[in-house]
Length: 254
Image (tube, rainbow, N blue to C red; front, side):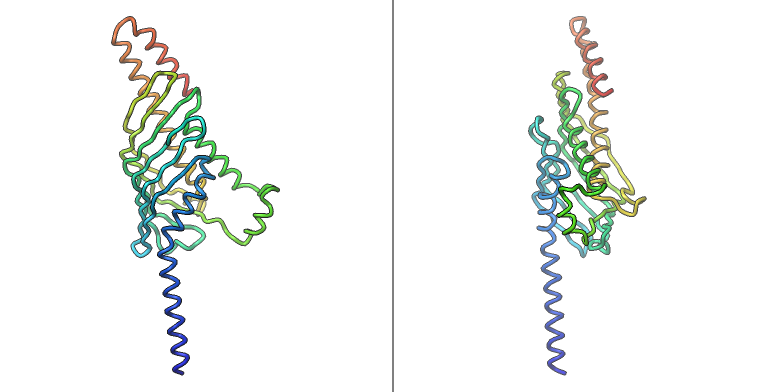
């Protein structure tokens, strides 16, 4: 009987140690997943400095997130100091992970419009293509890999609320000679994936990028109008340039 108790005690200790190792490894698992998988979704460089996850508290903080620009634009598109996440801890290891809240404070966005396409348009297209390709049937090229993973279910997510606040954007439109910093209005998305009982991370990212891109485009139109109005007030010499600026600025977003 004593031997059985000793064996049982040893098993409990091993299980506890395994759980602790898993919990301690979560941070590096998330960091590796973001840095390794996110670029496949955005088609750009992505870097996360640090993930700090507390399952007991149901909270996570992601620090030092950078989203690079697509080829031809240079620099970065997004810089985030930190992102606060509140999790439903009961769903962390389920097929559908429920995130109660994502709070993004003070992000820096860099919007560049070359011709009729911006850096965020390209990122949005990349995310859309990725989401579409993974929503349909697997291609022949990926059939072998699919067979290996046929017993694995893709993780899905539900995000009850996502807030982007106090964002600042640098708007750069070379054709208009426009380069200005401006605040962006708050972006609030709710019930992401709720209707479908879970959505892919790529589809969730698509909704966020789409909302951010729309906000940036609206801000650029507004700033173009302001710049044109300012030029009109400076006198006759600037009048022609102002009218051209206003016309071109509006045409870019048709």
